[in-house]
Length: 521
Image (cartoon, helix red, strand yellow):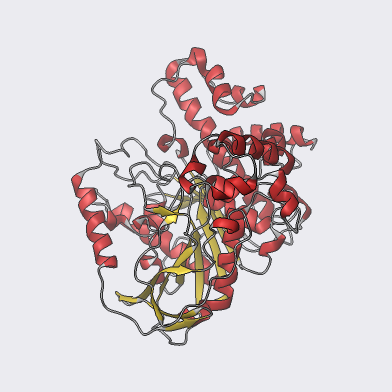
């Protein structure tokens, strides 16, 4: 149960933003005039369409430009989130959803219609490509925009609406591909930003893409996508990347994704894509929808897996800021039933058959050790190795700089809340990097507040210059040696990764699957 104090703070902050009636001078974009709200030294624009509604015949097609409108459009409330099951973060209220969902939101320090050349940070929400909403208060860009950037949050199609691959869709495509409609939405939003952000005081030549979890995976794929070339100039990835061998994820390959798509279409009772386009949208969330929730390696958007694109150097090389959290899995896995006797069998049910050295790297001789092993394995398998690989790729000679962090601060999650026991878990860094501690009436310490100021300054400095460093901040070196990792806690310091030995086991196993000599990845 979520404490009433938390609910009260969230409700109050929502009303504060959405009930404002201080209108700003209209701004002209390519589709018409829009009017936002003045908010605490910022101008806020909510629910701006960056693409046409992907309805009817536009289901499972590349996003189209939004239609023009007459008069002045009020941009004062969030649009519905894209159709989805569940929520992206435990404890969040399910958002209002719609198939008409391709909208973005802007927080800018520029006065409406005034000149300005502020760097732009574009936020891509997480949620496993199945859920998520830009309206979640934790994602609001007010505190970051107050530091002198334009903050934009974007929506994209999710689940089967965003990632269905199917032979019929591939055949009707001019690019002979299907499956990455959600990524195409992200690219369409970046193209809209390039064409229109100057009207909001943003500099289209200083765009940083940023995301957490599947949002960070999206960032890694946009760096690998030739379709996104030139649309961004810096990248931030928090606890998510796509670098593991495709041998462990064969469903990402187009032919296999088309097979899964065929099974999904049959499972919802449609005999063809034409019939599927006519079904009520909520019917699309049934059947085998859970198998259609990931991007696809296909010829148009993602012709090579990020690992291969980064290895060959054929990717969008920009400075990166990436990292992961010390206890990622505590928010995702209930370890109370984990037993040493069934550890290997449970892992196989969860992930399939993993190479034996991966299990051996996490001792599980007794139940207590097994519970820790379960958490550590999930952290390294789903998050830590990908971020380590990403940082090492970007630290190679001749490439733009990488900055690598390890977040280990434990927020004061209240007893009795859904967050109890999370620690430095998946999601935990978001309160700090957005500087949104005050959204939740928890017992924040002076160290928490100091870290929130530091992280939000690091992030916005990086968006401004490609370098997170600045006045009164502990020095963050580039990741040009293995001990140059910024540890984010009450005491910010530089050190190595505590889990490096287990990550090296992943390196050896993944290298063997790829036929790469040990240590050469």
